[in-house]
Amino acid sequence: RILVTPGTSPAMLLLFGHLLDAGDEVVLSDPYYACYPNFIRYAGGVPATVGITGHDGFQLRADAVAGRIGARTKAILINSPSNPTGTVLAPDSLRGIAALGGKGGPVIVSDEIYHGLTYEGRDRTILEFTDHAFVLNGFSKAYAMTGWRLGYLIAPADHVRALQKAFGNFFISTNEFVQWGGVAALREAGEDSRRFRAIFDERRHAMVAGLRALGLGVEHEPTGAFYVLADARRFSADSRQLALELLERCHVAVTPGIAFGDNAEGYLRFSYAASLERIQEGLARLGPFLAGPR
Image (cartoon, rainbow, N blue to C red; front, side):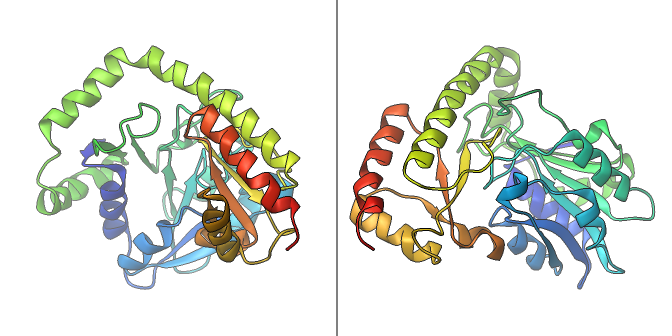
């Protein structure tokens, strides 16, 4: 049931090409990972978004998903831990969303690339709640193997052969030496991965505290991945313009919320995948600018 792919993005491209016909809908949250709608549209599909908010910790609720399902819904796409919000979906949400899929209903696609970077409680997978789901994952995050391009797709048994045929035509194979790197990570890097997680957790607390001290809104502390989506609307309603000003005036790079959907406009995404010293320096640079006249 596992297809090893040259990165997780090719696995996603392969999957949506396999699942979608022209006009089929994929239900997903807004905010979303910026590439999701592009993959869906490239395969001829239509993104059908469900707005989620910081007031609710950016949780995607099963009842909201159910309300978006229509006659053309082919799939429900979830991402936990999430980019850009850092949210880990609650077990009840996973269970409820899983119940919406299955035979005769939309399939569940779960992007779990940030598994291994959960800071409160244990990692949860959609496969705890249903077998009829597709799981996307890879080695770039939990094992810090960005650039190796090693991912995988877990598929229901009745879809595997068709996916294998498409994979052979599009990608032929995944580089053998890269796969051996993945084997080494699985066999030998467990302790390193746990150590990385503890370091990220320290940075997470520092980032959240620093952003709050600057007046940026973080209602619910994110508990996964390495991102904070902070409410910057008290400073500007135009996240793209504000991000550009922070880059030009403070030399601090952040991502404007609008890149992740209309529901994230007015927010900024901060990454703590940098040293604690660089995070503290970046926060220090932002202080005078945000405190000044606008």
